[in-house]
Length: 120
Image 1: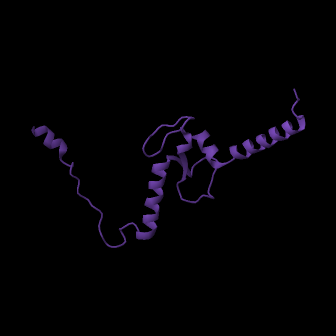
Image 2: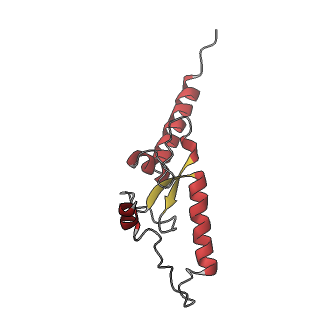
Image 3: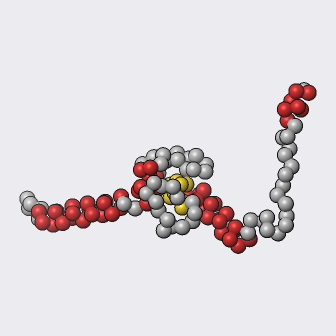
């Protein structure tokens, strides 16, 4: 039986260690260490088996803003992340709707619910 070439093995291990160290310094890996593996919108829980479906969302939409305390990150599942970016794109394209002079809705259908419940 041939012995493996020790220099090749050492080289492969060194490359793997460098890759792991570089990956661990990325913001996704930092966020996964900081926060519980739960989507910040729908509360879906993730495990090692499905964590690839959990993404890091930049709250201010600036992917270069990566403070190490994680204050610009939130973990979102891929579906909620897509929805969050769709809302942002719509805001950019169409605005918030308040600039047009249209007042925000103020009706509260449950305002007198407590009184109604007492009557019954």
